[in-house]
Length: 196
Image (cartoon, rainbow, N blue to C red):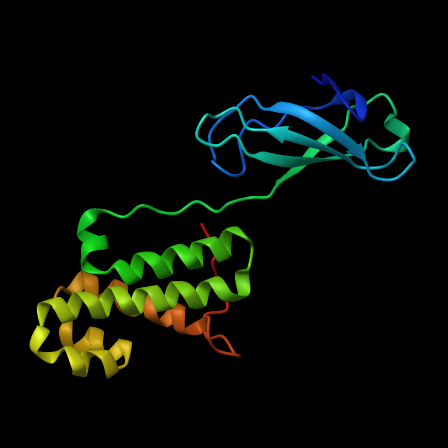
């Protein structure tokens, strides 16, 4: 079911309004402020400037709508995307954030890259965050060997300092996959970030 929109620049139908602010990520009923059709023909895309009604946000954002096909002149414009978009950060349990604040920071940078669909670099970031998490963890367990741990390759660090068998196996596999993200030729060609 389509909705009629009356804002400066456009008086017509769209399939739906955005229902989430791309900046604060809250569910909203946005306020349409202004519309602009790109181009002069009926087939032009439509952009509508909205404001977020959330009291903590109140930001403006743009929704882009695709024009209906020429054969479907009676159909409404279809919501395609909203921008700008702010990536969300993952909140970690205090045990993790106090053990390795660097891990949390690097992980969230990699998550932002993934959310921006920068798939060629986010895996490298996740791999780096894993190294910080493991090395900060084993450094806390073996503070007298902190300098050695810093320079030990991650796989050797896991083998030498991680005692729990389950953690060791998971960390090894994550390291293998993470290392694959940094190499020209991949060993694990059937594994990537898009798997569920």
